[in-house]
Image 1: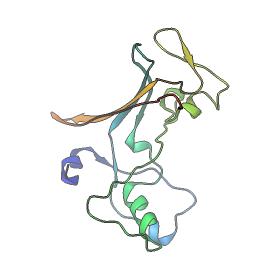
Image 2: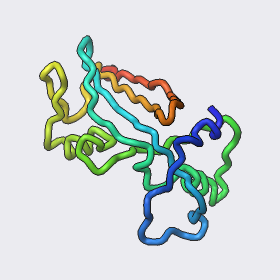
Image 3: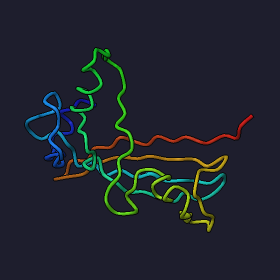
Image 4: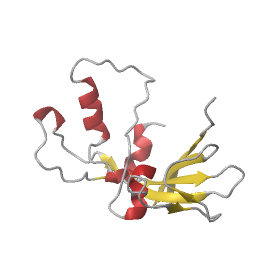
Length: 152
C-alpha cells in the first residue's frame, strides 16, 4: 500500500519530552489515526478482543523509527519490513501486550468462554487487525494471526 493512501488519516504526533536529539526532530504530521485491535482465541474457542489501541499512540513516529534504525549505518532496502513494536494507549483496555494487560501476570484477563489468561497458553491464537475509516474512505490492513504451538 502506498503511503499516499494514508493521507486522509494523517494527524499531528504526540508531544515528546524531553526534547529529542537533532536527528529525530521532524516537521509536519507524521502520525496516523488507525484503530487497532488484538484478540485471543483459545483452541476450539471463541475469539475475545483483549485490546483496542490506535497507531496514533506511538511515541516514536515511523519516520523517527526509520532514522534511528539507519543512523549508525544499518542498511534498509526496498521490500524490507519495519515493525513499530507494542502500541499502548492510556486506558487499561488499550495496553498493547498481554504482559501489560495482566500487569506482569498479576491480574487475569477474562475471555468470553470464562477462561482467564495471565500469559498465552499452548494452542492459543493471537489475532491483530488494523483499519481506518474517515469521510467515506476506508482502508484496511487485514489481519495477522498466529497460533502458539506446544513445545516438542
